Image (cartoon, rainbow, N blue to C red; front, side):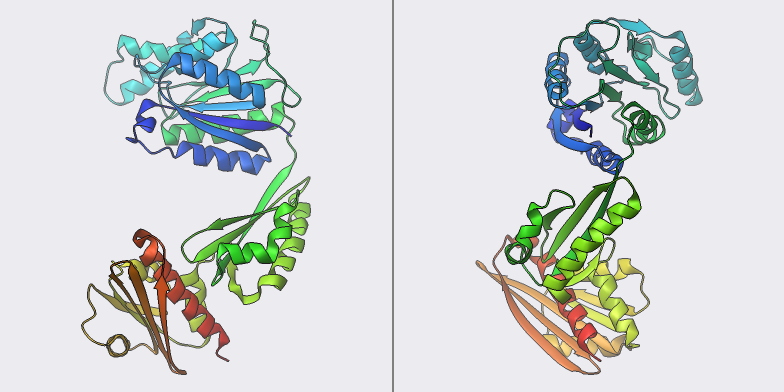
Length: 398
């Protein structure tokens, strides 16, 4: 199975001026191909550092994908750096210059001399034409006919360096349309990687690990945990020759986890606390209104984004003007809803309190919780705890 590393190139990334969304996109594409991603890095626009970083990455992995540094300016050094690494010269391609000039003309502009730099590609490289931008990409195979530095082997088959533009939409297009077919052919990829993510609410990461820690040592499928504020994701990843076989492998592990964790599992993949909760209310024929206090819209936004007509509306206020129970009942009546959820967050010194009230045709449920984490995460945690209570209550009612 081939292995890969990603190198995001751009001083603006190191300075925090631009967010790197390319690495995440590439990682997901590699995951779908069954390629193991070993490492990701971010480096600045420095040719010497690019050469050394590529050299080290190829010493560990079969595939190195770079993004950025293919523009027309002096501080776009990736082309030259990879040519230096490969021990070859940059070669001018008139056909690429024609394409670049034609695209620039679409903007009503005349190409400048410095933009001709983008038509220079390392000798012997495979060119990837860019139909949506001015920066062509390229692939250098290791070892190609040209002299290259000796590299320690990490897996079978020729290694490759793939240089992609940093503009996200351009990168995504070239990766999907050109690089993926190339990788499938070059490495004879047939393995399918399938992922199933279970969402758990009401249990902390440590307690979940205590229940399923033995499953986290599996080699295939693998099981991993990712904690959020009030919700923990359990990721099951399987590699197989076919999607059906991968699905069977995941199903066996998922069944085991369901047996161990029961109704603490709220759903899977695209399920959310709010979508599950509203569907549970819908089964009872109920509608919902909500009141939030000092949550900065966090609860209302979750319900509004769901688009479920079960949610009638709600109110957000910064301070509690009356008893939470009375305010929640008033909101229920105002929106002519059969149920209402009220959540209030307060902080006094280091003490953080959350009050939750749920009013339904079956009665009233009140909870008072304390939160010991960072205040910046408190509101999300409060909302998730409230939604988990709503989910459980709706599902328990016969």
